[in-house]
Image (cartoon, rainbow, N blue to C red; front, side, top):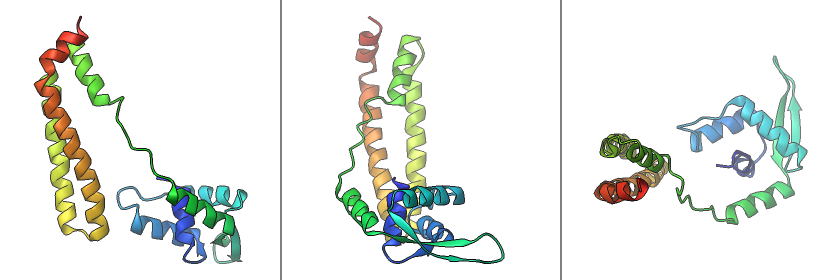
Length: 174
């Protein structure tokens, strides 16, 4: 996820302080990985340097000065370009799991055990996501669906690989 673009997009609804941006980000996108304050302020400094945001006001308080940031026209254009650019599909051509299976075969370990353990871990994750989906709002349901569909594809791959282990062993140990 592009944190900078996400923060810019949040600023389109109006100027905000860094604290407010962090809170909005965490509420909408960061339930599993909330932003650190330092990450917000370093990102805002970079966006300011590149002319994508401007300081809309500074408030003095009991602590450090609070800057209120506003998105610039260049920032709006940048968000529009980012939103219009399709994400590159993740093809997983160099999978750690595939590497483990091949190394197990090369070292005469039981690759089926690796696949079984991974299947169990995937199923555990799917149960957690399904429970979260059942209890969540629409945004949470969509996020969980995305993750569940990827896990389902992984499970299909695990089954297919398990069915082809003998053939794979013959190829990699030639």
